Image (tube, rainbow, N blue to C red; front, side, top):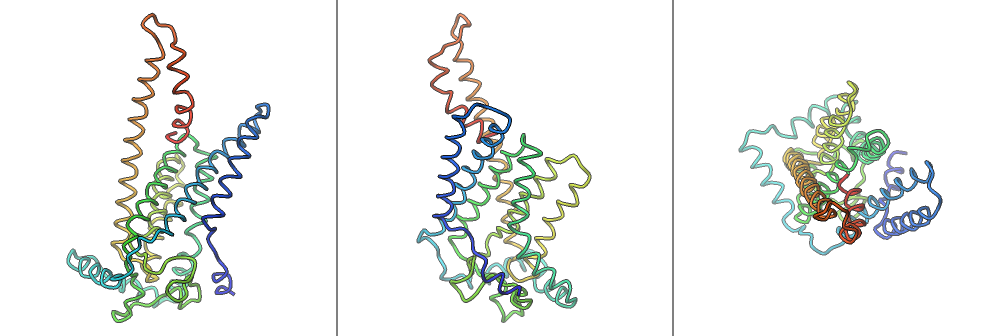
Length: 304
């Protein structure tokens, strides 16, 4: 049963993403012509965000079609990661895998967590941030987009995951427990040689850090456990190296820095525009204000 569900799982295509983005944009334009109300304002806010998210997803899926991938040498790159991790004293992923295999329920849980929590957790996080913490939503949406873009760029140089190095003792626990999203190389809902960096860990890091930053509740630490659980699951199942997760953490940190830098630059620009709207006699300069009005609204939405 599980294998049937997994085999039928498909990501929306880039065409579907762009169509969805266009539909949301058209609905947004139509709703803007309706007399404002609490419902229409909420609907407009949601549609505007859907345009951004579906557009970003469309870009991601489209970029994956570019003929830039370097699959040749993926196994050799994986072996170099093994050598590097050993040189800096990191424990082997194999020791973790052997531990969870020793306890059948742990092995099954790791495989189930790997396949079952990756995308749903992200959807729940984005909806929660949008509904409950709108003031911080834009920051974490931007960090998610930048981090995913960084992952996509690095993944053009393919790296094999541990499960391909069977000579070292690794196995694919998702295959063992009949939960694999992969078939033969080149099939399945995801790439085969895209271990570096781990987008599972990258998205989990955005969720974990975002929950901690946004929520004042003590329960946030429970939900932030999604991050360490993901790190353990992707390594135990043979899908990622420790270094894959470390690089993903670095990308999230870099994305946060870029977002903050853009925010500071945007605030400075908006401040200069606001100052220029007032002439020397203190009266508003209508021409200057009208030129940057639409750009300012769009930028305020993206930056947050």
